[in-house]
Length: 249
Image (cartoon, rainbow, N blue to C red):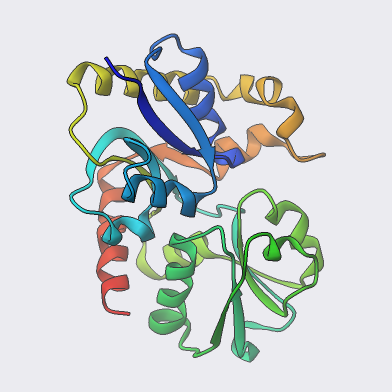
Protein backbone atom coordinates (compact mmCIF):
# COMPACT_ATOMS: atom_id res chain seq x y z
CA UNK A 1 0.00 0.00 0.00
CA UNK A 2 1.22 3.52 -0.81
CA UNK A 3 2.21 5.73 2.10
CA UNK A 4 -0.65 7.84 3.46
CA UNK A 5 0.54 11.44 3.60
CA UNK A 6 -0.46 13.32 6.76
CA UNK A 7 -0.12 17.02 7.56
CA UNK A 8 -0.32 17.83 11.29
CA UNK A 9 -0.07 21.20 12.99
CA UNK A 10 3.38 21.94 14.40
CA UNK A 11 2.08 23.64 17.57
CA UNK A 12 2.34 22.42 21.14
CA UNK A 13 -1.39 21.64 21.35
CA UNK A 14 -0.93 18.97 18.67
CA UNK A 15 2.08 17.28 20.31
CA UNK A 16 -0.04 14.53 21.93
CA UNK A 17 -1.35 13.63 18.47
CA UNK A 18 2.15 13.64 16.98
CA UNK A 19 3.49 11.62 19.92
CA UNK A 20 0.81 8.97 19.38
CA UNK A 21 1.34 8.85 15.63
CA UNK A 22 5.09 8.44 16.06
CA UNK A 23 5.29 6.08 19.05
CA UNK A 24 2.08 4.05 19.33
CA UNK A 25 3.27 1.39 16.88
CA UNK A 26 -0.10 1.56 15.11
CA UNK A 27 1.07 3.41 11.99
CA UNK A 28 3.97 2.32 9.80
CA UNK A 29 2.54 3.28 6.42
CA UNK A 30 2.56 7.08 6.66
CA UNK A 31 4.51 10.17 5.65
CA UNK A 32 4.03 12.67 8.52
CA UNK A 33 4.59 16.38 7.81
CA UNK A 34 4.39 19.20 10.39
CA UNK A 35 3.03 22.55 9.20
CA UNK A 36 1.34 25.73 10.39
CA UNK A 37 -2.50 25.43 10.33
CA UNK A 38 -3.07 27.40 7.13
CA UNK A 39 -0.56 25.21 5.27
CA UNK A 40 -2.25 22.02 6.52
CA UNK A 41 -5.46 23.18 4.87
CA UNK A 42 -3.74 24.17 1.62
CA UNK A 43 -1.95 20.86 1.36
CA UNK A 44 -5.20 18.92 1.73
CA UNK A 45 -7.00 21.21 -0.70
CA UNK A 46 -4.26 20.77 -3.29
CA UNK A 47 -3.95 16.98 -2.81
CA UNK A 48 -0.40 17.34 -1.52
CA UNK A 49 -1.48 15.14 1.42
CA UNK A 50 -4.27 12.61 1.96
CA UNK A 51 -5.16 13.54 5.54
CA UNK A 52 -4.68 16.71 7.58
CA UNK A 53 -5.49 18.44 10.83
CA UNK A 54 -7.54 21.18 9.19
CA UNK A 55 -8.51 24.53 10.72
CA UNK A 56 -12.30 24.59 10.94
CA UNK A 57 -12.34 28.00 9.26
CA UNK A 58 -10.91 26.39 6.12
CA UNK A 59 -13.54 23.66 5.80
CA UNK A 60 -15.76 25.68 3.41
CA UNK A 61 -12.81 25.82 0.97
CA UNK A 62 -12.56 22.01 0.71
CA UNK A 63 -14.39 19.77 -1.74
CA UNK A 64 -16.19 16.89 0.01
CA UNK A 65 -13.96 16.54 3.09
CA UNK A 66 -14.24 13.26 5.00
CA UNK A 67 -14.04 13.16 8.80
CA UNK A 68 -11.68 10.42 9.96
CA UNK A 69 -11.11 10.84 13.71
CA UNK A 70 -12.86 10.93 17.06
CA UNK A 71 -10.51 13.69 18.24
CA UNK A 72 -9.97 17.37 17.49
CA UNK A 73 -8.25 20.50 18.80
CA UNK A 74 -10.97 22.10 20.91
CA UNK A 75 -11.56 24.21 23.99
CA UNK A 76 -14.16 24.22 26.74
CA UNK A 77 -12.73 27.31 28.45
CA UNK A 78 -9.64 29.51 28.06
CA UNK A 79 -7.44 28.10 25.30
CA UNK A 80 -4.50 30.50 26.02
CA UNK A 81 -3.00 30.24 22.53
CA UNK A 82 -5.66 31.95 20.40
CA UNK A 83 -5.78 35.56 21.54
CA UNK A 84 -6.69 39.10 20.69
CA UNK A 85 -3.85 41.17 22.14
CA UNK A 86 -4.32 44.91 22.40
CA UNK A 87 -2.79 48.09 23.77
CA UNK A 88 -6.29 49.55 24.27
CA UNK A 89 -9.61 48.22 25.63
CA UNK A 90 -11.92 46.33 23.30
CA UNK A 91 -14.30 49.23 22.59
CA UNK A 92 -11.38 51.49 21.60
CA UNK A 93 -9.90 49.12 19.01
CA UNK A 94 -10.08 50.55 15.48
CA UNK A 95 -7.73 48.17 13.62
CA UNK A 96 -6.78 44.52 14.15
CA UNK A 97 -3.80 42.77 12.60
CA UNK A 98 -4.37 39.12 11.65
CA UNK A 99 -1.85 36.32 12.12
CA UNK A 100 -0.71 34.80 8.81
CA UNK A 101 -0.64 31.32 10.39
CA UNK A 102 -4.38 31.14 11.04
CA UNK A 103 -7.55 30.53 9.08
CA UNK A 104 -10.00 29.71 11.88
CA UNK A 105 -9.01 32.50 14.26
CA UNK A 106 -9.24 35.25 11.65
CA UNK A 107 -12.80 34.14 10.96
CA UNK A 108 -13.59 33.73 14.65
CA UNK A 109 -12.51 37.31 15.38
CA UNK A 110 -14.80 38.55 12.62
CA UNK A 111 -17.70 36.57 14.09
CA UNK A 112 -17.02 37.99 17.56
CA UNK A 113 -16.69 41.60 16.39
CA UNK A 114 -19.83 41.45 14.25
CA UNK A 115 -22.20 39.35 16.35
CA UNK A 116 -21.11 39.79 19.94
CA UNK A 117 -18.70 42.66 20.59
CA UNK A 118 -20.45 45.04 18.17
CA UNK A 119 -17.29 46.79 17.00
CA UNK A 120 -16.24 47.46 13.42
CA UNK A 121 -12.42 47.53 13.16
CA UNK A 122 -10.31 47.71 10.04
CA UNK A 123 -8.39 44.52 9.23
CA UNK A 124 -4.70 44.21 8.43
CA UNK A 125 -3.44 40.86 7.15
CA UNK A 126 0.10 40.09 8.31
CA UNK A 127 2.72 38.20 6.33
CA UNK A 128 4.68 35.12 7.46
CA UNK A 129 6.46 35.69 10.76
CA UNK A 130 5.18 39.25 11.25
CA UNK A 131 2.92 38.37 14.21
CA UNK A 132 5.97 37.25 16.20
CA UNK A 133 7.51 40.73 16.37
CA UNK A 134 6.89 42.05 19.90
CA UNK A 135 4.94 45.30 20.03
CA UNK A 136 4.61 45.44 16.26
CA UNK A 137 0.84 45.93 16.25
CA UNK A 138 -1.49 47.92 18.49
CA UNK A 139 -4.09 45.12 18.30
CA UNK A 140 -3.26 41.66 17.08
CA UNK A 141 -4.89 38.26 16.67
CA UNK A 142 -2.12 35.74 17.36
CA UNK A 143 -2.21 31.96 17.58
CA UNK A 144 0.08 29.14 18.61
CA UNK A 145 3.16 28.90 20.78
CA UNK A 146 4.26 32.48 20.02
CA UNK A 147 1.43 33.75 22.25
CA UNK A 148 3.21 32.58 25.41
CA UNK A 149 5.77 35.35 24.81
CA UNK A 150 3.60 37.96 23.05
CA UNK A 151 1.09 38.12 25.90
CA UNK A 152 3.69 39.89 28.04
CA UNK A 153 3.68 42.91 25.71
CA UNK A 154 -0.04 43.73 25.83
CA UNK A 155 -2.13 45.02 28.75
CA UNK A 156 -5.43 43.81 27.26
CA UNK A 157 -5.78 40.11 26.45
CA UNK A 158 -8.96 38.50 25.11
CA UNK A 159 -9.06 34.71 24.86
CA UNK A 160 -11.09 33.98 21.73
CA UNK A 161 -12.28 30.54 22.85
CA UNK A 162 -13.49 31.92 26.18
CA UNK A 163 -15.25 34.79 24.40
CA UNK A 164 -17.02 32.37 22.05
CA UNK A 165 -18.13 30.18 24.97
CA UNK A 166 -19.34 33.21 26.94
CA UNK A 167 -21.74 34.19 24.16
CA UNK A 168 -22.80 30.78 22.80
CA UNK A 169 -22.51 28.40 25.80
CA UNK A 170 -20.87 25.93 23.40
CA UNK A 171 -17.29 24.66 23.19
CA UNK A 172 -15.14 25.79 20.29
CA UNK A 173 -13.37 23.55 17.77
CA UNK A 174 -10.23 24.92 16.14
CA UNK A 175 -9.17 21.98 13.98
CA UNK A 176 -10.41 18.55 12.91
CA UNK A 177 -8.84 15.59 11.11
CA UNK A 178 -10.11 15.42 7.53
CA UNK A 179 -9.27 13.38 4.44
CA UNK A 180 -9.82 14.32 0.81
CA UNK A 181 -10.51 10.75 -0.29
CA UNK A 182 -11.84 7.55 1.30
CA UNK A 183 -9.18 5.88 3.44
CA UNK A 184 -9.00 2.16 4.21
CA UNK A 185 -11.19 1.30 7.20
CA UNK A 186 -8.29 -0.51 8.80
CA UNK A 187 -6.21 2.64 8.64
CA UNK A 188 -8.95 4.76 10.21
CA UNK A 189 -9.12 2.39 13.17
CA UNK A 190 -5.35 2.41 13.64
CA UNK A 191 -5.20 6.17 13.26
CA UNK A 192 -7.76 6.71 16.02
CA UNK A 193 -5.89 4.27 18.27
CA UNK A 194 -2.68 6.22 17.67
CA UNK A 195 -4.35 9.52 18.58
CA UNK A 196 -5.88 7.98 21.70
CA UNK A 197 -2.48 6.59 22.68
CA UNK A 198 -0.90 10.04 22.55
CA UNK A 199 -3.72 11.80 24.37
CA UNK A 200 -3.62 9.26 27.20
CA UNK A 201 0.13 9.85 27.65
CA UNK A 202 0.36 13.65 27.84
CA UNK A 203 2.79 13.30 30.76
CA UNK A 204 5.41 11.99 28.31
CA UNK A 205 5.11 14.91 25.89
CA UNK A 206 7.58 17.27 27.66
CA UNK A 207 10.31 14.63 27.47
CA UNK A 208 9.67 13.58 23.87
CA UNK A 209 9.58 17.21 22.64
CA UNK A 210 12.01 18.67 25.19
CA UNK A 211 13.76 20.96 22.69
CA UNK A 212 10.45 22.41 21.44
CA UNK A 213 8.78 23.42 24.73
CA UNK A 214 8.79 27.17 25.52
CA UNK A 215 10.97 27.90 28.58
CA UNK A 216 9.13 28.01 31.88
CA UNK A 217 5.85 26.68 30.49
CA UNK A 218 3.87 24.12 32.49
CA UNK A 219 3.08 22.12 29.38
CA UNK A 220 1.09 19.43 31.19
CA UNK A 221 -1.23 22.02 32.72
CA UNK A 222 -1.74 23.60 29.29
CA UNK A 223 -2.52 20.30 27.58
CA UNK A 224 -4.77 19.08 30.40
CA UNK A 225 -6.66 22.29 31.20
CA UNK A 226 -6.72 24.39 28.03
CA UNK A 227 -6.98 21.89 25.17
CA UNK A 228 -9.92 19.48 24.90
CA UNK A 229 -9.41 16.61 22.47
CA UNK A 230 -12.55 14.41 22.25
CA UNK A 231 -14.71 15.40 19.28
CA UNK A 232 -17.99 15.30 21.23
CA UNK A 233 -21.55 16.02 20.14
CA UNK A 234 -21.39 19.42 21.89
CA UNK A 235 -18.21 20.30 20.03
CA UNK A 236 -19.84 19.33 16.73
CA UNK A 237 -22.79 21.57 17.64
CA UNK A 238 -20.41 24.45 18.34
CA UNK A 239 -18.54 23.81 15.08
CA UNK A 240 -21.76 23.76 13.06
CA UNK A 241 -22.83 27.09 14.59
CA UNK A 242 -19.45 28.62 13.79
CA UNK A 243 -19.61 27.42 10.18
CA UNK A 244 -23.09 28.93 9.85
CA UNK A 245 -21.93 32.25 11.27
CA UNK A 246 -18.88 32.51 9.01
CA UNK A 247 -21.09 31.81 5.99
CA UNK A 248 -22.99 34.99 6.89
CA UNK A 249 -19.90 37.22 7.12
